[in-house]
Length: 257
Image (cartoon, rainbow, N blue to C red; front, side):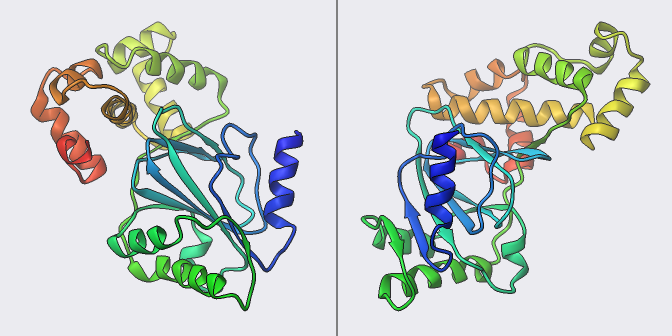
């Protein structure tokens, strides 16, 4: 694909530069990788990063660090998306830069980003902009923030793909392990084992993740109140919805909105 080839060439053509890109060039491109580490900031809306192992959810005011040579593709479907990409050359020895992770944007990082709000293009060693951006990158590992961990595992198992696709389409309905197993001609034990072996997650936990992710989308894209959203994603008990939301995100629904 011409756009993909152009993106990778732009990112990697100067191995020692730091590149700042504010255009959403990575949206819906096929899986790809770069020779540089990538700091992808989501400052408005909701983004998804697909990898070979999991689909990661990145809410507003969070960032994801993508190590160099890590296959990924970016997707988003919210109307108020605001993304900034920074591409950094070899990132040194800190383990932080070798692992993909999602973190909240701290007050300090937010101030530094505000300072760079008009920056675009490449910056090279010796310029004060390069030194500033390199300091920003080094800050990431030193903040020691807790990872945001909303993600859904993926699988190549065609039968399980069909099941999970069906679950996604009926997220507002009662979804029971027994009913799902029966619909697909499986025993409860077989379906339970399929989820554990292929997705490394239980059926119940998968449903919880689906519902909370959908709730987050609705909070960003609609004017529905929290109670309406809870019902729409399959919860009849608002307290249970709020507690599950907090368990997975460390925020109450009202805080997230």
